[in-house]
Image 1 (cartoon, rainbow, N blue to C red):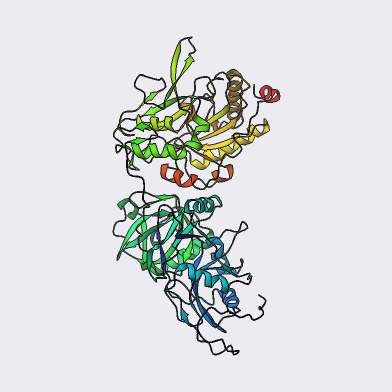
Image 2 (cartoon, one colour):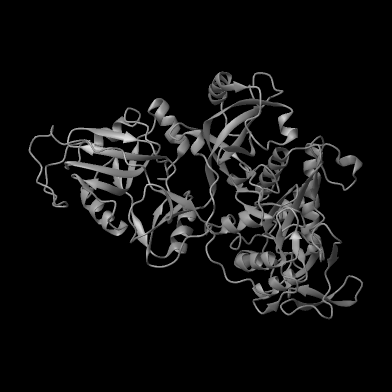
Length: 636
């Protein structure tokens, strides 16, 4: 990094710096201020919001000719971060203590912990130090100054452009908007800080962290042995301390390459112990476990925690050497104030709003109603203005359930009747929703699932979608279903049709091609049947196009029968009547390869997901296509 020309900086009341660069004392390490995990960003103009970086927290002590870089626990990692230390020595100051995060940026400018780990091993990526606070300058302690004043000082210190050292920008107020933008950009989240508070070397509620996706540190307490030759373990057993006790938080079996497996196996051999370090490891897990001293800390990505703290869909990112295992303590989560619980929402009165409808997730009727309101703008384009059928579970998903498709006397406001002539010529009133109030009404009558027709009211004889439901035999894995979905996508592409993927919240995938609603049911159904039979003829060991249970053993049923008048399919963003409150969720084709189960998304994770303001089906509404004559002839 090129050395800058000297400049004056009158930021402290101390004496002007000597021209000698060897007399300035190196400041001592200062323990960092830590943020408390929060469910939502705080509101108001007194909060500053910054990007949450995915790297190593670093306290830098700098003098005119020396530099020390410390981890948050006070370990000296100057040698590991030598390029950053070299850049810091170029600052034209007598001395300073800086607080920030050292990261490696990916090709999209996002910090990546995995790239940082790789860089520390082989120097493959340039390090960047994002500085967000200054605690001392030229011998003056700034910690009692309000954050906004410390930021002003820091901004002046880093005024000149640097490649390695960067000022971490912040936004005043508009927390929800800042958080949504961070999630939209695929960032880890934000840190919100009260602008008038001093710096405190402890965890406080004047600093709050809000995450787009779960990513935290956990202690490795053991491993599950592998039955595969050459693989030292199948998964890691994770935990976090509650005081002095290590509590079990689940296991992680993905994210390892061969080098990682070998490295961890060698570490485990040195840390082996005979008994479990957990106070509550499940008996089923313990039967086939190897135990280690709880000293290694792993960075883990995950979608959510269950109510008892177990991680869902975790992935291993790497080891953290900057934090002692004992500091991995379970964190209390700050819940931002919510609207008081109520028995009316969007004009619909909710009876028994606290009745639990999803036993595993412990979600109530009110939770379901609030979910429908939150996702209404995403959901209504796919289920509004269409006849619908509901799966109703008045006493929750474990109780009695039944389908309802007809409008009945006493149906709550919001659910509307639509007159339809049945195939036998009789006319009946079906159910329909066309706004958020209608969705809340669905919740009121404990409608846990919404299944719309494939055509809109006013044009019921012309479907606006072509849909294939990939229903696997129980012996198959979700990876088999993913590959089958890609095969269907490729086959439709040869017919000139673009398609979209929906994980159903059950065990399968829907492949859906939007249509222009210019062709009738007979045409679309005939084409769908031809596609399914073509797949079954080409690869009979993988696919079957008939509903026979016997013929489906070891195969995937390509269900094409949903492409007929009156047939329904689960709506995008609809919950499923399952204990965990899984949700039928639109995904991109690229994202599908990373999803490990059709029920990977739940009501809580979808609510978090939509905060990113990204649409995995962007372009669906504009994709209006017809099945060509050539394709109809080929698949006849």
